[in-house]
Image (cartoon, rainbow, N blue to C red):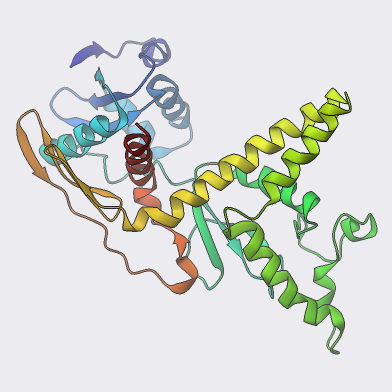
Amino acid sequence: MICRDITKDIARELKSLPQGWVFYALKSGTEYLYAGISKRAGKELYGYWLSSREDRLWAELFEQAQKLKYCPMPEAISALAKLKSFVMDHHPLYQHRIYPWADYVYLALDSHRFPFVGTQQFSNDDWQYIGPFQSRFFLVDLLDSLSRIVKLPFCETGTFPCDKFDKGICRGWCLALSTSAETPLEQDLDKLDALLKESFMHPNNGILEMVQKQRDAYFEALEFAKADLLDDEIRLLSDYREYLNFLYVIKDLSWESDEIRIEQGQLAQATVNGKTYDFPIDRSEYRANEKLAIPLSITDEMKIIYDYLKERANA
């Protein structure tokens, strides 16, 4: 591994790491403090260093860090195997005290509870959970997009009804919650349940194709500005569809080669530098409302596994 002393110009040292998958480890004079992998290791470590201004654990870590060791990796799966074997061998001091997934969020659905759709940090309530997702911004953009296309709820205030109903942006599903008498709106909440599940839980729901068709119509009519506006929407919906496909299959993915064994979408065994390692597997039992939810702590690992097997299947 390449080793650098962490100088006073730590920002430059961190940001100068090479692009592509990199394994890295921060070390004090005598012991390893933290190890990780990233496709943008310089940017990631620089972000952690910025976090140390407010986060006590990162502050402690960087105060002790004297050396930065790293090595470029040929692909994500080998980087993952390197990281898991390294942690097993060296037990970095802060490895299980710092959570890179701390800001990940789940998409939560409930057609009979305000605000119907939202984000939550954990999946231990009785909402219908999807995720987690690395970016809250991605989910906010998705909710905004689907609220406009299908007129689904996207309640940004804690009170209802809001001005979206007056403007015709929303169908006013919340009105069914504000009356004690039985109304057609109350019965419509069952319709909302079907709409939420179709829009958010079914990859091939036709919404992406509808937007693509509208985009093509604008383009053929030479309304290029309008067509361009839908390009970002199409990318957003495409990324969400692909992530749903990942969530549907990852818990059951198993595969084996001479070098690695995958069980339940996780790396169970790997041979690194001639040594074979057996890794513990998270065998969580999922509730019915967690069909499309996976544990926060293994989300990144599962996504690497999924992308690796998908690439092999398409090779």
